[in-house]
Amino acid sequence: MNTRARIFRRTKAGNAAFEDRHSGLPAHYRRILCAIAAETHSVVLRAVLPCYSETQIVQWLAELLTLGLLESVPDGAEPDLDFTGRFQVAELAAAFNGRT
Image (cartoon, rainbow, N blue to C red; front, side):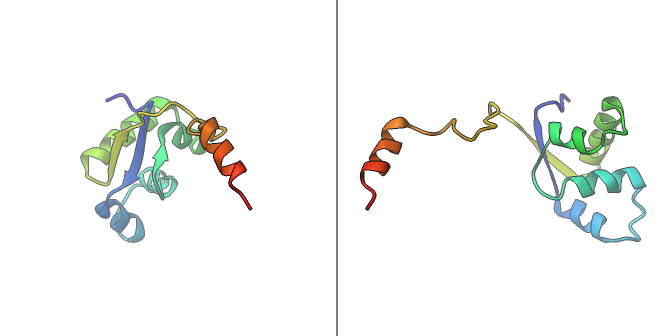
């Protein structure tokens, strides 16, 4: 599976395993589950786990997906880092002109 452009999130089982300190999760799984507290893009995940190789992270993600502790969905969106991708000039002008 290509994990480059995916959004990861914990499943209910993943939340339960992470919250249970006696679940027996290996430390590297716990680190990944900690980094995925909410929906997390694969690029962000790699940035917060810089001490591991991409190959290792991909392998661990695949294992966590297989165990049912994570789920993922395709990214599907172009990066909109300045949050202006959905703005319509006409809507902005109307909002500006209609303000009181």
